[in-house]
Image (cartoon, rainbow, N blue to C red; front, side):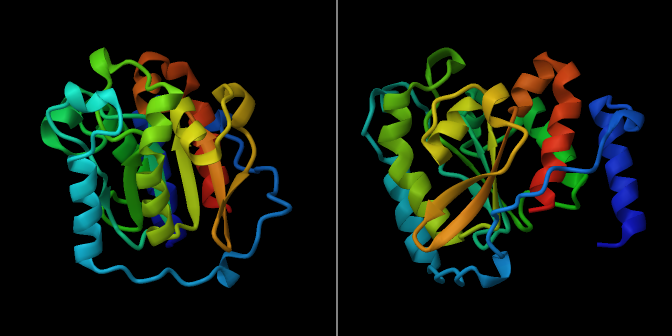
Amino acid sequence: MNPIRRELTQTQWLNAMGVDPFWIVEDQPPASTAPSTAEAPQAQVESASDWDALEGQIRSCKRCDLCQGRKQAVPGSGDRHADWLLVGEAPGAEEDMSGQPFVGQAGKLLDAMMAALDLKRDQRVYLANAVKCRPPENRTPDSREIDACNAFLDQQIGWIQPKVILALGRSAAYAVLGQEASIQTLRGRVHYRQQGDQKIPVVVTYHPAYLLRQPAEKWKVWQDLLMADST
């Protein structure tokens, strides 16, 4: 990426996030055991019909009680050969209406976060959720609901074979890593998800919706994004 363009987009994002660049520390702890992504196996090319079939299964899924209150399930969207997989927690009211992940104010904030790394939601990025149906009143999905939905996410990860996964929120971290722990415990270092023969780096950070409520935490997300970008 052109370094001048990178500096511009990062500055724009920092301004949008309300983060003073003076306080940003770009040096991140090295991921000492990270495997070389250059040696990762090539993703198996799945046809559009395979994806269509999977999305059809998601939209008609009745594996848990969340299906009873949904308007529609939200399978995910983006580049099916993405370098980045961003996993959120569950659809909200606007996602439930539109059938698309990360819309509304949280989606706009996520777009700004991606733009800082010269990423777009349809280029090098795939967006998905741990749970594909909206929980009542936008509550946090429980572990049983995440487990019921996890086969869908597992299939998406297997087909995409991303170079890095960004888990946005505690439920997303549980779905990707199988660890029930707080964000404070999980963030700040690189984790790994074993996907067949591939070992995928995983960075855990806060969900954009949380940042709308707690803007003081934005600088931590900036550090996490730099860490993910360096894997």
